Image (cartoon, rainbow, N blue to C red):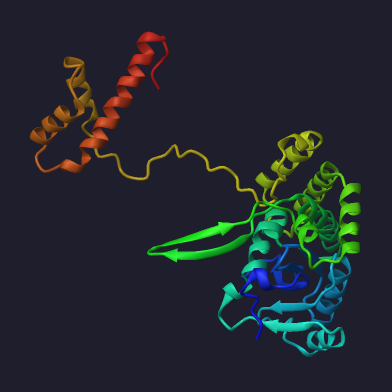
Length: 339
């Protein structure tokens, strides 16, 4: 069984293949899946949406992806998904003289290259919402056509060359960042006429136009998310995004559709206030002794109310006193009413 364990010994054209499901794990229904392949040697990545997860469509999707590759497809390594381990897929690989191998059971790291691209490319640009229907399928296909050009021709990435253990530490060595296109051009195993095609295609592309098309497709996907996955806050965010679309190229990085909403500051208590019944008493002490420390006030409380307060609550009182002094200072200096 071939596992593609050594990147340097893998001939360009041997790919890993996997699925990315655009659906929720606890939800029922038919949703779109993305079929993704990546070249182990160069990192070249292609993806296509599948309206229905069915073995004949998987073969058709692979045929489409195969036509988009800049190099001949020599071999495929997949996981043990039933979408790949079936008669239709095996027959296709046999007829096309493609070497087919699969990973070991329960060893997901055998698919390390494709799993990394599932997160760094597909999830990053598409997000985690679920999509269904032919309109969403066409929108995803349009996004992937722009995405493949942007990622493979203009997005550099690191590639691990080697790693070795020294005691408890693992030291890794990486090649210089390069795009998949650059790696194929520099690879002596790639034929010269294929390199010329790659260079001619790259010369015709405009990365800013690709970036603009990607954002347009992302905004369309956000509006097509299945009911129950886009709330009012996300819709407002989408409106703001569309209004800023002409200026988004200045930000450089492509906006992920799954960006999380910033957490709001908590303005309520989660525990009962231990000093609620004695705060007026503390304020009287502070009026008589404005310079009293929180620790000295806490010691007086323990004497006045034996057994009611533990030593661990002194910090709470110190923060309360410090906040009170800050409010009083604003009131005295800036004539700001205390709240």
